[in-house]
Amino acid sequence: MKDFKSIKKIPEILKIAAINLAFLLVFLELGSLGWYFIKHKQFFYTRSNVQDKSALGINLEGVRLNQSIIVRLHPFFGFIEKPGPDFRPGFKVNNYGFMSPYDYPFKKTKPNQFIIGVFGGSVASNYGIFEVQNKILPQYLKKLPGLKDKEFVILSFATGGYKQPQQLLILNYFLSLGQELDMVVNIDGFNEVALSNLNNKNKIDLAMPSIQHLMPLTQLANNSLSIKAMKTTLRIQETKTKINQGLESLEHCSLAACDALISVYVQNLVNNYRKDTIAFEKERTKPQKDDGGSVIYMNTNKSVLEDSVAFEQIASQWAKSSIFMHKVLSASNVPYFQVLQPNQYYQTKRVFGEAEKQIAFNKDTPYAKAVEIGYPVLLSKFPNLQKNNITIFNGVKVFDKTKDVVYVDSCCHYNQAGQAIFSNYVGRSILESLQKNEARSKKK
Image 1 (cartoon, rainbow, N blue to C red):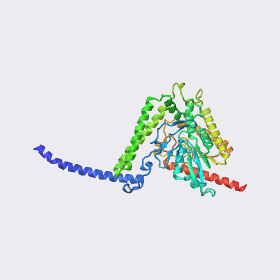
Image 2: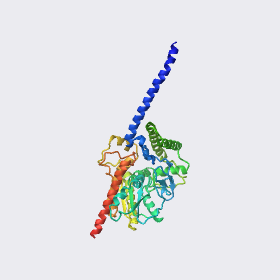
Image 3: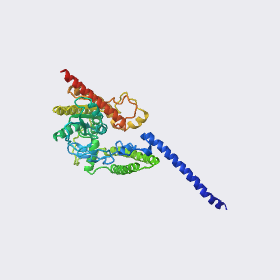
Image 4: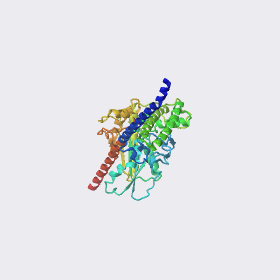
């Protein structure tokens, strides 16, 4: 009898459960709608169609969705990104491995086009992308009477991991192919001290391309990449596939709750991707016991140089390379501007919030000490650079006046807010320099 009464209660229990579930889903949807509005500053149901995966609300900074994490050897540049598509609309990794809408060498299609070449490492590459998308520098340059009617074309010759003399060599290579340039902006400093220092610790010549990037290519060529590194590579590839699938699902969500749940899932995948890439970097850059049979030749040092000796050589190489870039460009009356990029490990008066500290600093990074020691040595070369008529801007204090989070990782890269501040600094500095030159010319 009791069992019969219990059975009779089942429909009532199911009804209550269904009502509670309905309320839960309604509240989940309402909460997700509020979360979406705060995040995107628009209502979910009236949202505009997304043309760019980076606009889906997922922080994809540093995630190479359509690329292998291992770069390709290049006989002249050292290494390049694999040419192919990119998730940013209008961009691709072009025929020479640079992030650009164009293949190189780029030929002017209109007489009023003004070509600006950007050189350096990943910070310079990100700057080039931001400039193509937002045209900050052209907005400043158009304030000059002679440039107000120009159509500005930004060409990036920068790639993550590049350091002098790679910028110098790449400039000369493309000039030899007939690449026209009306202005050159070289953004560097961090890679020179951080990556050259890793070369030194591995007894590799300081002027060689980054050992951090060349070593895995050497190991692959020698069939000696560790099993642990290969497993991490496979895991990264699987994660990238899941990220792409998640982003695809996000584009087709019809409910705000769907967007919220998948966003959390995809962002967690992105975080795992970043952790695995850090682990891969550590594993792939472990020195080999014997590379006598390597098919890749790199100039080596007999011993690790003392820091004082190494960083003086690094800074001298950096300065000389810049001087030669200026000389070859000045022969064609092409203005050359150099920017020492800001980095969190070089201490200024900037106050970091707790949230940014968690993002921007890593006690285990090999870069911190290199920047702390190396940046002052780079700064000591400024008088010599200026003596050689090089216009160089000291950008280390660019972020001192902002309280916003500007760093996106514990290496050196900036988020969109940081990119805007940095790009405006570069544009404003170049404009002021050109205006001063014009004023001096009029006085003569």
